[in-house]
Amino acid sequence: MTSRSSKATARTSTEARAVARTQTLIKGRDGIGTVRKTTLPGGLRIVTETLPSVRSATFGIWAHVGSRDETPALNGATHYLEHLLFKGTARRSALDISSAIDAVGGEMNAFTAKEYTCYYARVLDTDLPLAIDTVCDMLTGSLIREEDVDVERGAILEEIAMTEDDPGDCVHDLFAHTMFGDTPLGRPVLGTVDTVNALGADRIRRFYKKHYDPTHLVVACAGNIDHNKVVRLVRAAFESAGALDRADAAPIAPRDGRRALRTAGRVELIGRRTEQAHVVLGMPGLARTDERRWALGVLNTALGGGMSSRLFQEVREKRGLAYSVYSYTSGFADCGLFGVYAGCRPSQVHDVLKICRDELDQVAEHGLPDDEIERAIGQLRGSTVLGLEDTGAIMNRIGKSELCWGEQMSVDEMLTRIAMVTPDEIRAVAREILGQRPSLSVIGPLKDKQASRLHEAVA
Image 1 (cartoon, rainbow, N blue to C red):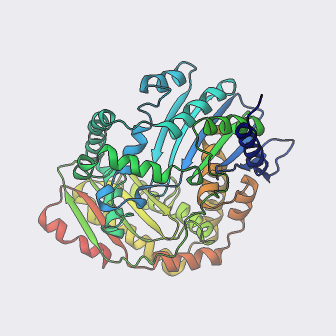
Image 2 (cartoon, helix red, strand yellow):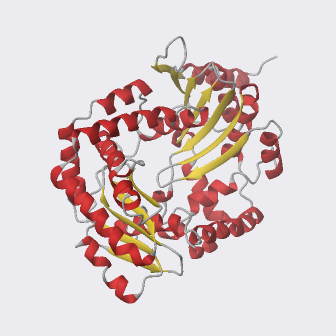
């Protein structure tokens, strides 16, 4: 005999299930490349892309939280939490989590960025149910025990030390600080020795409960998969954890805002006994939603995106002043960065900086010739496709697109948009971005006289 309360529970469950919404966002050819999205009651979004020709699948969960969501005292909490979700749940120990994926030849990892965190597993298509159950269990059932926090603290401090030992990596953190100062975007994702040592289990648990609600999560899956099966497996995993109880909850919107970044002419130097000086010369860029980002992408490719780029040719090929030299862009919800990196002997740093500054000024004033634009467009289109040829990259694309833009763009649409960039658009974005007074970050063994001359590069 069924009780009245059981009937009410069943009815509530049925009503909740009825409001799940499924959409086809991108219709592929013969089912290949079809992107579908289901929003579950409780606000959890699930996006998939089907690729019947492969034998693998990548499953990931994206969290709408990054280091820019931290207060100064919580700096490093997002990354710390990323580590702790691998340390065990009520159903699995840390060894159970890692051995489950290892036993089927899969790979599992995670990464933390300024505005999001992602946990993923890549496995054979037949092992996808295992990957889904394991990753969902980690995200919904982490214990965050005091002893695990203490043990993992040591690992994170070693990771910070490892980064400090790599000046070519560390200089990008310094550049973020140079541009953003002591703000969430300017602080390191890993945190500092002091902030990591100060973080305890209680504070991290509160951070976890606040930011890992289903409304803050996007599930993404790509490969030889069936969308409806993925939805069923994810739903079962979250419901068994009691994570979808708020049937009327809605997903949070992508980040927005218009942060005005007005940094110019700042120089930061960290003296360190290294064989090379590592420099980043740059200025404010564009937010990731800015329509001019396509033109900036072509401009960046032409300036420092490959062996035929201006900076590579002028600094390395013609003069042999550096082994590694490139330009890059970083887009956030409300602002962005454009930077030029080079690693060179300390005695050559001023020559390298002068060449880079001259090239930026030249392009800002005169733009790029048509042949360089055409080559950059072709290179960017090709690298875009080649960078999306595995299920992990595709999972990243659809997951990040849903979390950060709230929409999907097919590869064909991306290629068309790149091809549509005009010389006038590139000249306009070059004048605006490269015409700004740059700032400079340097790590290396520069002597006092050399260091005093660094301001010449940003004058």
